[in-house]
Length: 54
Image (cartoon, rainbow, N blue to C red; front, side):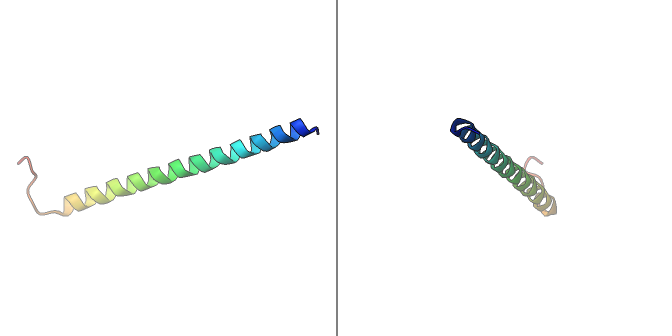
């Protein structure tokens, strides 16, 4: 393998790694948003107060 081919292979590996990291971060954010939504809705349903628009 030439130096240029090695450099390209390293760059591809780095890009692949960065994409995987980005994807994992996005999935984490999605899980956190879903958890926040579910918790918020659960807390809202537990309230004994009448709805604001009622």
